[in-house]
Length: 89
Image (cartoon, rainbow, N blue to C red; front, side):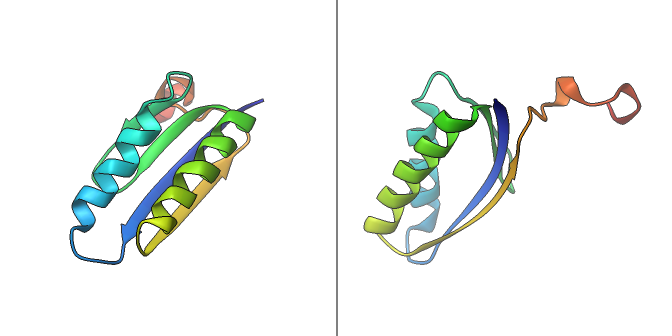
């Protein structure tokens, strides 16, 4: 099953920008996951189980290396720009 995740990380310490960049770079290493980054959040597209495993591991790594809060939205389908109805493009 394909899924979409929208995630925002808020590192609660000095040097927060680098903590967020590090998280995104770790997520991007998985070539089976499509990653789109903007100024407010990051969208991940891929197979549900692989997305969940990736998030479990990378969020845990972030928690073990400092304080952080994650906001996550999860959809059980691929919600890419290309899949939007034409009227919304």
